[in-house]
Image 1: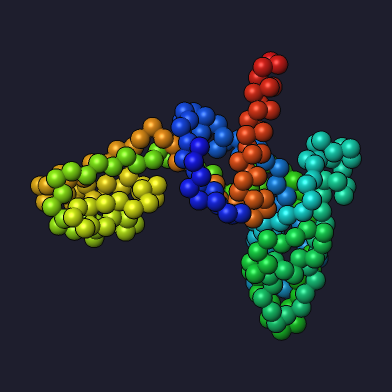
Image 2 (image 1 turned 120 degrees about the horizontal axis):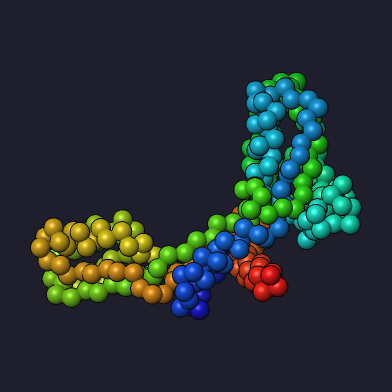
Length: 248
């Protein structure tokens, strides 16, 4: 494996692995427990949005807290307790834009400026939301982030006369030309072949692009956990599933 880009929110790496293994890791990321609002009790809603829309927006707000157990694995047997659920409240009066930061409780809001609804003079919004840990296999709101992969591009340039037509053709601006065309940051190439088509149109055929056997893996976190944790926990989930298969 080779790390290409790495920070808390995003990791990009290349790896010499089979595509089926890459896909197994991608799918296993759906089994990472993530905190999200699951139930909402609305006592007062004077905004223009229906209660159901408010509840839907609340469910999509990324939350994080100390690691929580799944309700089905909790000692409370699914009743809901401090180990497996968190209570959050909103009680506000307009005029104002109600944002994620107005949620008060024992959970951290990842993006505090996310809008929920707008209130005019003397309009009120009062509710209690219950968040719990869940897996994306159950519902998309429990998603830890965006995980995807593609083949790394393999590019060959020969007999280039430096006409620079390919520079303008590349939508990602990855091509520069001195004596001949050169590709910078080849990992960003998504194999659109716009430069190849331009060369063919000019009857030059100087550029050839094809997918290599090397896999390029992308992990982008929504903020609940770091990108590197998504990778390690996805691999742990895959190992657990393989153990279950072995026992069966």
